[in-house]
Length: 371
Image 1: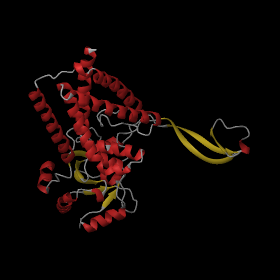
Image 2: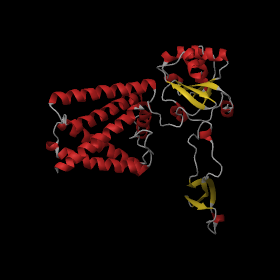
Image 3: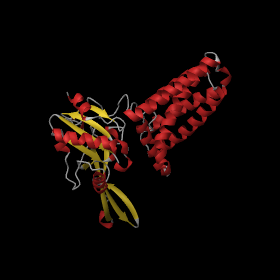
Image 4: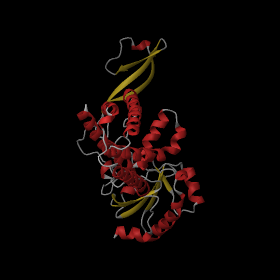
């Protein structure tokens, strides 16, 4: 029993620290996953607290893992870990059964787990934490109480600083396809010879108040007695999907400008503002000055948002901005830069530099990165 407790202590402690650090590296991304769960369970009123909750969970996971390794607050920590893992096991179990959430976000974008894999992972953790819970007497502090408390306090302080730093100044490690060094255009292309989706046509018919689905080659002989309802395509086998498959921007009239953006030679600056009404307004002054300087210097400046064209136009007017917004779906915008607003400097479609809402660069800083 003693060996099992010590093994569980090390394994669970290290895993919680790694999981917490990965999520703390991208707290905004983790908050998007929380919002996804909130919407599934009809608790959208918690959406405004998603970022704060994601930060707390990250700091708690790291602190709890460190406390477990140090042997500090054993009884309290065991109870908290047990309650936490029971909750997440039920949650990932629900996801595995229903398939409503395709990724639990346990390890952010660094390690993608399928719902079933997330559930099995939590089942293993539940067993290990249960061993810890019932074998608390075997968990002893590594050092004396003063050193243990200082080490734990330091871990909490460092994890809190790291969590807030990445929230304000973007993730230290970017795992998304829009990371620095990637060519956005190339990642939207499907290579020659790549497998394509295998699609099966299904025909929906109705008879005696009931609906039936038939394959094209399996129609019943008395099909004339059925009433046709609809036809749908079912993907039997997915083909190659490029890392970036939803990058499409249009203007207020619905005209697409994706190819125009990709056709720019040299440097261009992209302002990514998922929702104008939820932007950090303190950064708008810096964006206005920077965009004015870029336009004067002939540097292409693109502003992209998921806000409706009408609301975007009103935002431009209210803040006296010298540009127009193009529209894109919110999902790719959230992946492009973990900030609202955020900036991407690109050269020949390659991402050179990113900035968040808390460090909007001056034109001089922008020129330094261009040189």
